[in-house]
Amino acid sequence: MSAQEQVEKLAVELKGTLDLEDLESKIYLSLLRTGPITASALAKDLNIDRARMYRTVDKLVDRNIISTTLSSPKLCIAVEPQQALKIALERKESELKKIKQSGEAIVDKINSEIATNLGTSIPTLKIVQGRTNIYSDIGQLIEKSSGTVYIATTLEDISKMYHSIIPEKIKVCEKNGGKVRLLVEVEDPEMISFVKRFDATETKMCKLPSKGRIVVQKDKQMIMSDSNQTSSNSELDFSLSTNAKDMIKNLDNLCQLLWKSAKPLDKINSKKEKKK
Image (tube, rainbow, N blue to C red):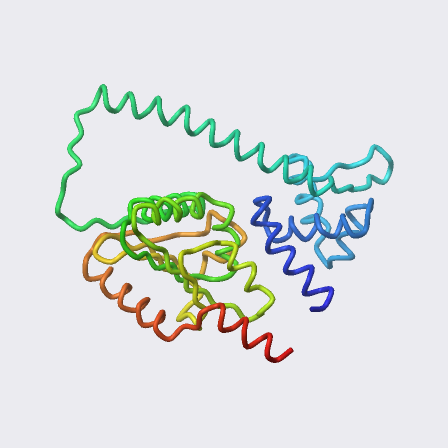
């Protein structure tokens, strides 16, 4: 693997771990490589418009991922990776704490002030915006399942899901007697270990029909997103969620067909070792 390929691979993992956008992860990695450097010089090194570089640097400074000196010109300095991870974890913990506190208060108000009637046999459909909201819906689908759930998506999406609640919900699903089958397209064999750490119940590799995302549980629910789910801007990620039986049946049948023709990761590893 070339140095450039290694950097690109690291950038994919890094942006998922620290919740960064593409350019932000590239800037952070470049600063770790070069050491203190001006934003102007860094823009030239990465072939990026200076105005865009300055805006992105300001965002990273606000998040304490990088710092700038008081000298003239200012130099940009990346924090140590361990410190960057600590900052990201503290930010997520703070967000979760806030959601839990405000959410519990709202639920209590609803239960005490509004008489709810949630029962219906009519199929429902909703559009969900934002990767965080979509991953939350996927986590709920998996958590409630005691059957087989198929996830068919890209390697980049898996890298983001790994840092969400979804892996934790897979364990809950398995305890309930269910299983999660992951279908993913991987061109680089070096990324197989990266896919394995997602720890789905079963995983296979195949050529997917699109760059979108499919999550489906037979007779229950399906969540489907188009190719925008690969965008670095998480707010451009949209999904369709429905319990409509016909739509679920069609997607479940598609995933079953893909699963039958897909290759287990272990067999691909064996082929790789034989070539060596």
